[in-house]
Length: 142
Image 1 (cartoon, rainbow, N blue to C red):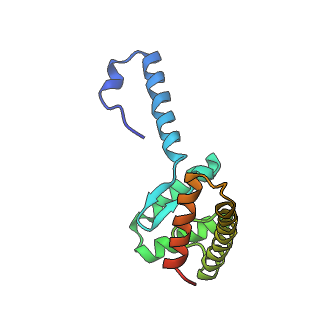
Image 2 (tube, rainbow, N blue to C red):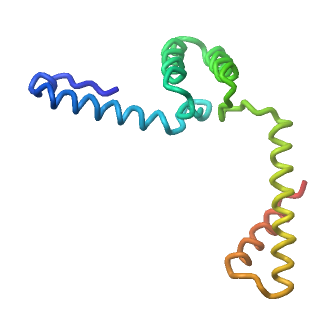
Image 3 (spheres, one colour):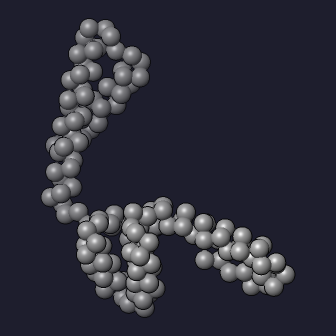
């Protein structure tokens, strides 16, 4: 949180409280966004206030540790909470499964749009979407 070194001395109590409230709102708003780290992002905005405070405390404690140990402790923290981090919490098999599901949904959408193209009821937006998906399918075969 930002500090108010000299300005707090010249403020009235009401102004000081308003300034502190504004700083807290700004801090809380920033915690709702994904937090960028060296190894990716973590969704700490989805944590409860107590969990968030615990996370920030842990992060301060881990500053002195080597990178590998720091990442292991953070993974352990998030796995204990049952949340994922974007820095590799999913296994390669999970990512492959997710890619297969995405590809299946894309193939279904291609079939639907090709049917619309055949009967002439396709819009320009759908036509561009179809072209992009066909290009993706052509460029990234399984």
